[in-house]
Length: 68
Image 1 (tube, one colour):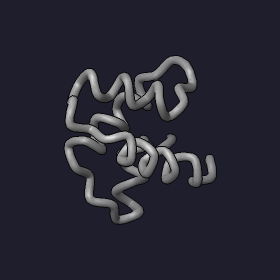
Image 2 (cartoon, helix red, strand yellow; image 1 turned 180 degrees about the vertical axis):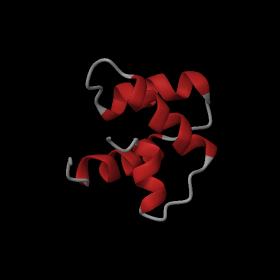
Image 3 (cartoon, one colour; image 1 turned 135 degrees about the vertical axis):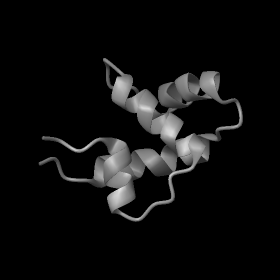
Image 4 (cartoon, helix red, strand yellow; image 1 turned 120 degrees about the vertical axis):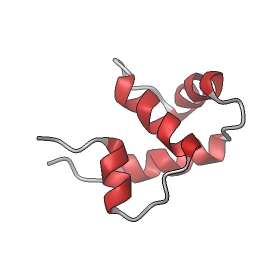
């Protein structure tokens, strides 16, 4: 059983804001491998207050985790 991005962030002790939850969900739902700019574009369609810096931070956390 693999952890979701949301679960991994919570395990790391990150406070999961509504913006981070949206970004994590967009990434989980992606059939492709979007870069940060594309991820930002998709997430900001859901919540226009999401900043690209938030997307970068969450992406760095996601890619720095080893796969199990």
